[in-house]
Image 1 (cartoon, rainbow over the protein chains, first blue to last red):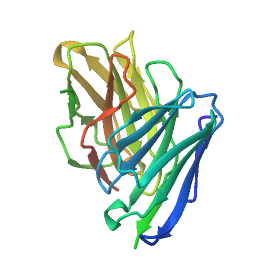
Image 2: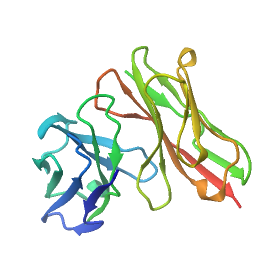
Image 3: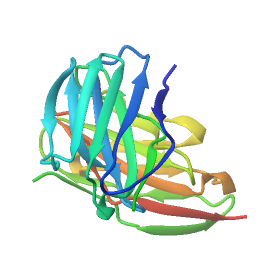
Length: 113
Length: 113
């Protein structure tokens, strides 16, 4: 099973709302990733968790707050977003050791109004 | 800084034509190479990968790629394309033991029926 699941599929939120994106994998992977993808562009890395610890934060604004409750789950908490944050948010997972072959979820299409 | 370049941003072919999409990277050390595909409305899928060994690797759906170390290239090929191959194709690289995928800009492939 190489499935990464993400909920919700679509999310519309106002600039004052608080919402969360969820990601789950059951492949025994110990590294999990959040990416942001704009149309017709490659994904941009936001965060990496390795063995449930935040390993990489690519200078992401504090209005995005990641959380890794356990080795299978990854959340992204959203607060006070801007319209330019509208994008497809992708979760991925990989083994916790190189070469970090990443498997992607279907994404959450986020629209900030 | 490391980078990945994909030579063609848009490719239009007729069904049954042969395909070759170029990918070059700039890094002299150890690399792991990936091709991902994103079909319209679907999530990123791993098409094939190269870590070591035989430089000619075969992936899903009849795709193959050849790693040529001297040319820093990892070109994607398919002998006979189908309409269902219409998609965005991304070449990506990880270097040494890093998590971060370095992405090419992507190639939009359109197959005319």
